[in-house]
Structures are given as structure tokens and as C-alpha cells.
Amino acid sequence: MKKTIIILIAIVIAAVVLRFSYSNILQFISGQASKNKPAPQVLAEEVTEENIIRSYEEPGRVISKYRVDVLARISGYLQKSYFKEGDYVKQGQTLFLIEPTEFSNAAKVARANVANLNAQLIYAEKQLARADELVKKDYIARSQYDSMLSQRDSLKAQLASAQAAYSDAERSLGYTNVKSPVDGRVGVINVTIGNYVSPNTGALTTINSTNPIYVTFPLESTEFAAISASDKDNNKNRRVELILPDGQKYELEGVQDFQDNKVDQSTGTITMRATFQNPDNQLIHGEFVTIRLYANNPSLVPVVSQTAVQENQAGKYVYKLDENELPQLTYIKTSGQKGDKWIISEGLVKGDRVIVDGIQKVSPGKPVTLVSAEEMAKIKKAETAQVDKKREKAEKEDKK
Image 1 (cartoon, one colour):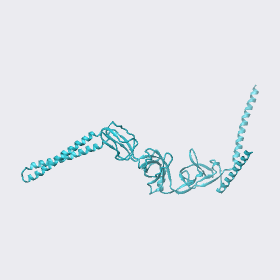
Image 2 (image 1 turned 180 degrees about the vertical axis):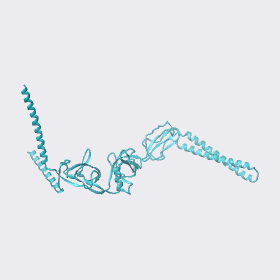
Image 3 (image 1 turned 60 degrees about the vertical axis):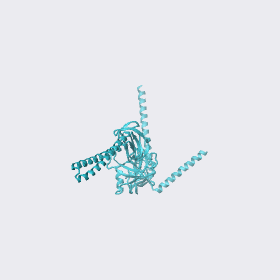
């Protein structure tokens, strides 16, 4: 029994050893085959620089130039509204009516008081003129004249006060018509007809101006430094394009005419602002868009052929040759295109060498064989001919 167990254990150990040895042999054979496999042939080129107008694409948000809360400036019952929510209104257009009767009556009383005092003043002026003649002839005492003069001056002061009160009553009456202070689009009505309102009620509604309109967007501090360096003294009124949420380009160009005076510490960006004309009210306050900002002056920037650039979930990348001529995967950032080349904003500099053809066979850190453009053209021609030959052979076999 013990002998049988020992034999079985020996067989198991032998099987494990044979399997391990077989796996190592396969790995060795595969490694040798890989070593003997010729390095892929690739075409490389140097990164160059070109004098171009740099552009920066950033997310932006549409902001009204004016956002005005419409308030009641007097107290009273809201009697009428003259618009619908969402309407476009003009400056000075009446939006609401606060019950005017009380203020109309107050204005009438104030006007009557002005008329009364004005009549008294006219009479006092005439009496004073007569007294002036009489006092010169000593027909009346000087004290009587002085009393009439004082009465006239008192009436003048009372009339001025009454006129001010009348003006104030007229102003309050005018406030019963609540008017739009700006051109723009009306929002939601916050207080409905029949409610009692006062200056403490808050906004009856809100108006957002629509033309012109602002778009604010962030620009990284490094990009801001680069565009400022290229524009130098011409560091204002840059050209701006706007891409709508549906991907369409807005037909009118804007002007970047403002930049904040500080860097946001949490994001490392500077807030920029562009102004756009909005005659058809196509741009709406709060809308998210894409902004493309252009420098005013051209500058030298690195560029690379589009064929050299690949992309994965982490972003755009190229295979850059290191000092040992080995390809290294290098992630880059781009800021637009010029012809058949990408404009590089980060990751490459002038003189770097990148693979532009034969990329499919390249592995990071593995040797490659560099060939000329002419040799690469011949290789591709031969590969195409081989593929065509295989296809023709397959078609003939299918016909049989």
C-alpha cells in the first residue's frame, strides 16, 4: 500500500516538473523568435516651428450685460401687468400698474396748494409795491412796510415748499407705472396682480439685457502668459469665435475686451470676457458655449504632422525617439491645426524626433529601424502588392 502511494506521488511530481519545463521551453522559444524578429521599419521626422496665430479653445458661459431687478418704488396694490413672461421689452416700457388713485389725489391737492400760494404771493407783491410808494411819502409807517415785505417773503418760501411737495407727489404718481429700466428679456413674474407691494417686497420680475451680450471663459495662467507674450503691446480686443451647444458656429464674431486682474487660486485660471452682438436674441443668458480665442500677433510654435499623433482615453500622444533611438510614448496637448499639422502647446519642442509612419508596429521602448521617405514608400507599395496578390488568390479559390 505504501509502495503504491509513493509511486503515485512520484508520478504527480514528475508531471508537475514536466509541465513547468515545457512552459519554460515555450517561453524561451517565443523569446528567441521575438529577438530574431526584425525591428519594424518606421519613418521619423523632426518637430519644426512655424509662425502662426495661436488659438485657444475654452468652455464659456453667456452672461447678460445688465441684469436688473424691477422693484416697486412706492407702496400699493398691484393692479395690472402689461407683458407676458419671456417677452422682450424696451427701456421705458410700462410693465406694471400700482393702484394710482391715492397718489393722483395727493398730486391734485399739492397742485391746488401751489395755485393758492401763488395767488397769495401775487396779491402780496401788488400790496408791497403800493406800500413802497406810500412809505416814500410818509403816508404809512416804515414798520407797516417791513411787515408787508416779511409777509411777501414768507409766501415765497411757502410757495417753494409747496412746489417741492407737488413735484414729489407727481414723482410718486409716476412710480405707479413701473417701467423697464433697460432693453431686454423679462423673466418670471414674482408677484401676481392683486398683491400689496412696497419697496421692501423685492423683485417683481427680472430683466436680462440681450444685445450686446457677454461671454465669460477661463484661460489657464500659462496660456495667458503665452498669448500676452506674443501680443505684447497689442494686448487687447482679440478676435473671438463662438461655437453653439449644437456644434454650429455663431455667425457673428466677438471681441475679448476684458480680463480679470487675478488668477483663481483653486483653478489656476484667469477669467476672460468677450462681447458679442446679439441682434436676433439667439444667445441666452446662462447658456454654455465653446469659445475660440485668437492672438492678435503671430508667434513661433512647434508643429507636428497629423499622421504622427494618435489618441486614446488619456489623450493625444506620439512616439518620440529618445537618445538611444528608442520610441517612447509621449502625451501632448494641441491648440488647433494648421493645414496637415497639429499645433503643439505642450509635450514637444523644436528638434524632437517623432515617428510619423509605421506606427502600428511600434512598441514603447522596443528598437525600430529608421528608413527614409523613399524607402517607406517602396515598403508600402510592396505591402499593398502582397495584399492584392492574396486577395486575387482568395477570389480565384472562391470561384473554384
